[in-house]
Image (tube, rainbow, N blue to C red; front, side):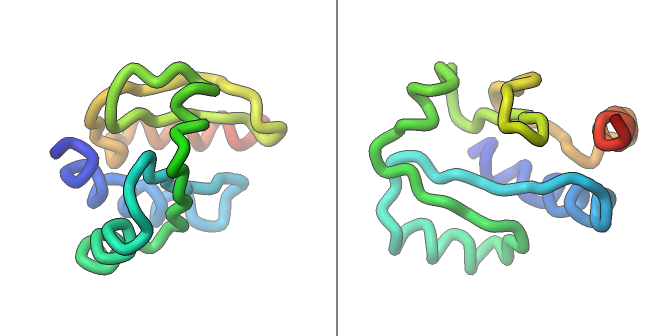
Length: 103
């Protein structure tokens, strides 16, 4: 699944953005806690994972598919979204995020 495939690139992004004004978190929508815990352990994910059993995030941001990535500013306002798997280790994407954190 795309969400599983993009985890290594999210880990790479996390390392690239370490020490900058940037946070990564994942939200598991509709999964039970035991399944999520097992998945996180198997993937060795270093960023926090939150549970959303009622799909409230999906309703709030009108998600179109899984995975969906949201970029929010420091006040929590929506900036952009990415639907589907993505290579977060892409140097242009990292440069854009780096620039955004300096504003």
